[in-house]
Every structure is written in structure tokens, then in C-alpha cells.
Length: 227
Image 1: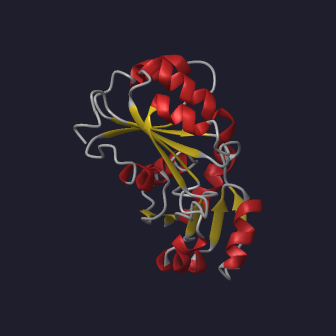
Image 2: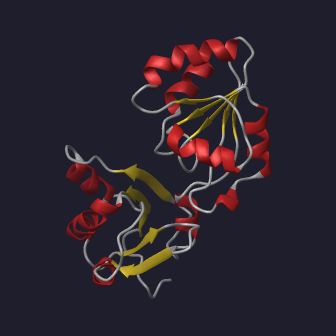
């Protein structure tokens, strides 16, 4: 069986006991970056064979992984942080497992956008998860399309591009659109910067731009009075 095992996005205490049990019992652990995962596994007291599995090698090693699973091995896949498959490698391997009639078990657990969304104060009944936008080609086209959606929008962004994204959002959604920019979820300096995009721009000027950000853009016409 292939296990998709979420790992903490910040606080190590968020690792579930079931996730630890799966990692302890499996035959092999596939990790997005072994330099990140090996120290974490050591912290958990887990000593298993760990091999890298990331976007640059997944096509090359996928067939070998499938053969190991067919031979009866139990394999766990982890990303650096969060749930494999959410803006991280996993889809191609899971699809190959389904085609080969190999069981896949996805453990519930940490993912950044869920706590950011439900604690943002913006509508969570309907939302569109964008993840990371294209860095260059198609970026503006995608933003303009997102602006047509009648629901809350969730975007992931790297720290060195978050200010650029804010400017793009103001230009595309309008400075009065309600939003929430969230950083360092579950860590010591977790912070939610909420308000209109214009207000967030002022607040962000005095903020340390560290760590990956989750950006929540409220739906059109979601005014403060309605909240």
C-alpha cells in the first residue's frame, strides 16, 4: 500500500500518532527533500530507509516505486510540510497506483490553507483553491480569471513575491476587496493580516516578510456590513 502522510507545517506537535505509527511500520519512506525529512524523522525516533521523491525525479523513479509496491512493500510518501499532493508531488504516483490496482491510503492531517481559511473571517462555504500562481507566463491571465469567480479564493505565495502579489491583487480585484494574508501558520509568529487590500498594503509595509504565505481573497460584494 502507498500511504500519503501529512507532516506539520510548523509546530511539530501537530504530527498525529497514527502518522507516526505508519512511518514506523512502513518499509520505505519517500521524501520531497531528504535534508529536511531525515532530521524530522530522527526527532520522531524513526529509522527507516528514506529516498527522495520530488518534481524533478518522480517520472524517473515512479516505475520502480510501483514495482516495490507490487512486490508487497508498504511505502509512505511525505512532503517537506503539509499534505502530499497539495502543491507538492504525489498526483502522478497516486494515479499510477490506481491504474495498477494498488491501494492508496491518504491520512488526514496538516495543510496550510484550511486553518488560514477558517480563521480568516471570510466565507468558507464555497472556495477555489488556486495554490501557487504561474511565476511568469499566464500569471495575469489567471488572476483576471480568478477575479470572475463568485467565491473565496485561496493562493499560496513565496515570501519574495508576496508584495508583488498584493499589488497584482489590488490591480485585479480592486483595493476595497476584503482579504486576509496569513504567515507562519502554527508557528510562534503566526499572523493574520486582514482588511481591504488597500489596508493590508499599509500593514504589510511594516511587516517582516518571512515564510510562505496563504492569501485569502474574499468573494465580490462581501462587505464588512454583511459580515
